[in-house]
Image (tube, rainbow, N blue to C red):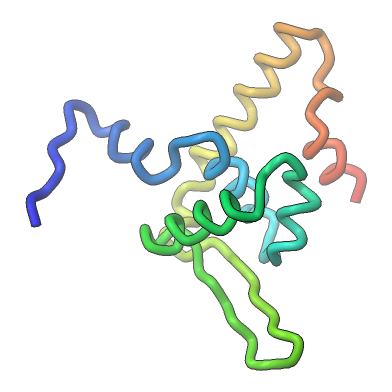
Length: 121
């Protein structure tokens, strides 16, 4: 298998965490393990198909661990792998910049629904 050539190293990062949903999923996982139903509540606009696809890709890249419990009904949780935890400073920086951008554009950080939910728990 030929190795992919990158023009700049950020391309490799974006290959793994790029797209509309992966960073959102990863940011939620920085707060701890999540089940599929948790993601559906936290990210209501993601389809089940897209959520499953994104989680599988993150698992294949070694960023997320899928934990299956042998019980009835079946229980599956997702968590950041040790390698995935190394993305936390990047994810924190993206969230911080996003909040600054929202305030700059709209004047109100309370427009970030997820942050309001997480801060009031």
